[in-house]
Image (cartoon, rainbow, N blue to C red):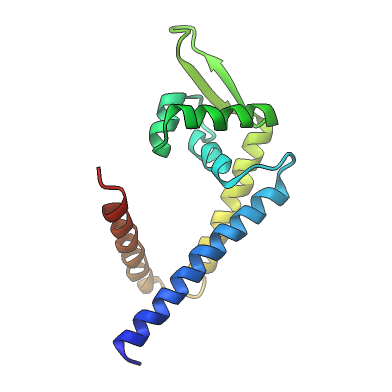
Length: 151
């Protein structure tokens, strides 16, 4: 197989993989959640996390979005019952958000989706093949970050 045909095949696999992951992730989220949430709302839930209440500023920064965009997403998630807002006693201007019980359940279900995806990827690999896979994925990630997230 020539280098050009190999590059074409890799491109085809990556395009299909990205499309399929997004579609499957969206289907997984919408069928498991009542009321349903979007992929963007799931990203907010993931960023809030399970551990403790986080400030709106922290969540917006971690997601790389503006406060108005986050506020809109949080409003929808509060209305759906997945997130709650709390003001801190130290400074009433600071708003923290945390997951409700249904929000934590969705977080865990989505976490399981990711665990299953990773397990399927590495299942048939030998232990000595894992560093090559991780290095290749890291290079791809770094390419996208350097190319598209330049500050």
